[in-house]
Length: 77
Image 1 (cartoon, rainbow, N blue to C red):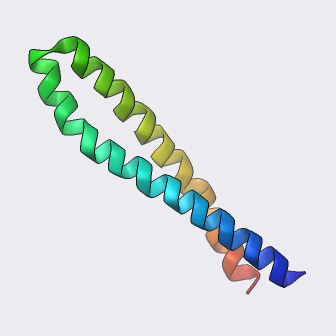
Image 2 (image 1 turned 180 degrees about the vertical axis):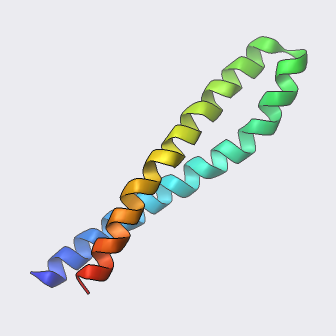
């Protein structure tokens, strides 16, 4: 039973960590162009800010399950 729970938490930890890293990269990559585009092309900059906003929320909310699954993974070993 502990082996199965360890495998499940390991997979969930991997998935939540991947979501966190991808959304963090999207946030970092889009924030500077969004600032620059807003100055010259407000509609494009606004659209890019929406992407940055969504990715930053995904990044923040994915930290919680990553931490929880990391603790469970240590607990079930």
